[in-house]
Amino acid sequence: MRELFEGAIKFKEEDYLNHKELYENLKKKQDPHTLFISCVDSRVVPNLITNTLPGDLFVVRNIGNIIPPYKDSANDLRSGYLATTAAIEYALNILNIKNIIVCGHSNCGACSAIYDTQDKLKNAPYVKNWLTLLNPVKKRVETLKPDSKSKRIWLTEQINIEYQLENLMTYPFVEEKFDSGQIQIFGWYYIIETGEILNYNMIKREFKPIKTN
Ligand SMILES: [Zn+2]
Image 1 (cartoon, rainbow, N blue to C red):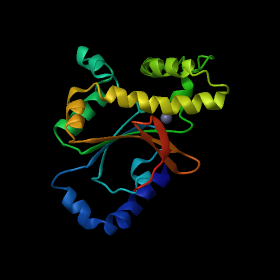
Image 2: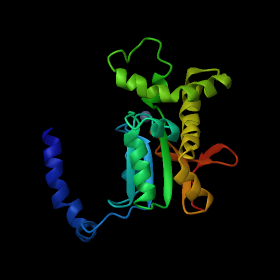
Image 3: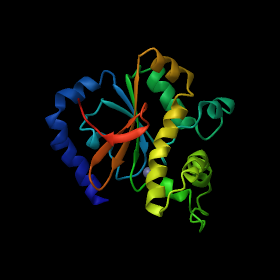
C-alpha cells in the first residue's frame, strides 16, 4: 500500500507538472472524444494502450466488457445492469462522444469462467449472475466446435466482442447516431503478452492488426 501513497506523491510532482496546463483546462469541463468499454482486468489499462491523456476517454469497465442488451435494462430499471447502460447513455446523449470502442482482451477470466465445471464461483453469486449475460456467446462458440481449449477461449474472447457490438446496436440512440454517421464504432482485441491490438472488421467479420491507413 505504501507504494500507492508514494505513487500519488510522485504523480503530483512529475506527471501532473508535465501536463499542468491540461489539468487546469480540464477543471472547466470534460469533452472526451471516445467511449471506451473494457474489462475490469488489471492488465488492461485503457489510457496506456491507447497512448491517451486525461480527458480523452470516457471509460466504462465491467467484468468481461459486457454490454447488457438495451431491452433488459429498459424493462427493469432496478436491474443490476444499469451502471453500464447509464454510462453509455450519458456518453452519447450528454457528452456527445464521437467514437465507441468495445475492447476485449486475451486471457480473459470472464470468458473462461463460463466453461467452469468446478463451480469456482460458488462464493460469488453476483459474478455468476452477471456472467449469464455471456450465455449467447457460449452457444455461438459451441456451434463452431473448437478442437482445443485454447482455441475455444480465443474464439470466445473474440466472439464476445462481436456479440457486445450487436448488443450496443440495440440501444436506440446508438443505432440512430451510427446510421446517421454521427458516431463510429470499433471492436478491439488486446493481446496482453504482445501489446498488440486487433481491430474488428464489421463487414468481413474478422480481426486484423490495427493499421492507421
Ligand atoms: Zn477480462
